[in-house]
Image (cartoon, rainbow, N blue to C red; front, side):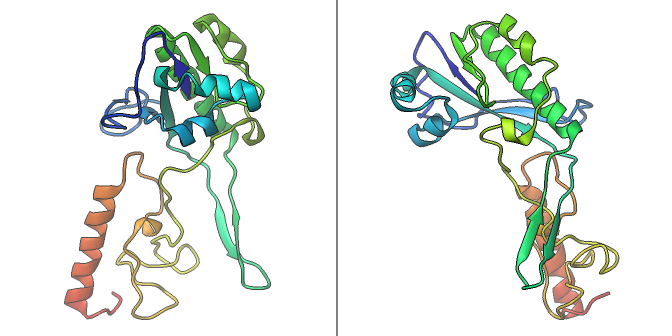
Length: 227
């Protein structure tokens, strides 16, 4: 999400992620739908990739860089994907946001836009293909019930990846056990975010470090044996 203000914001200086709106989250005591709004830096490269338009249109908007602010809509997705090997042994990844995630993502986009207009933004640019710049909160009405598809969204990406080698109680359900020991490779342990079976809804740095220490202690006391 990008917004243009009347006064300079200079969002390429200082802490790049110093603020967040957590009232819609579903962690840390919140019972919201499961998304957060976090401000992000307005560096030239990332801003250019997020703004609509090409050629002279994009150049004119980039000339307003000091007046731009950006926020990320962080969705705690509930969709599930699969990683499988094809006949040639190459990994194939299948993942698509389901209808519920897309609806909540739309609600997060609208919430961010309303926050920007409440802060007196001149224009708001939605990360939706062909969407025109919005100039008031009333312009959001057309998007309030609009159905989103992955093809309509631009700048849709993962900020933290989980689950590539999930912990599980059996080989049919995951790659390693609760101690991080791989079922199919003796002496191999997984301690990074790929072992986490679901997303945490928050920055996973502390979770990853805690889990890595837990697994390392098990390896040290059991000599790498499973169980």
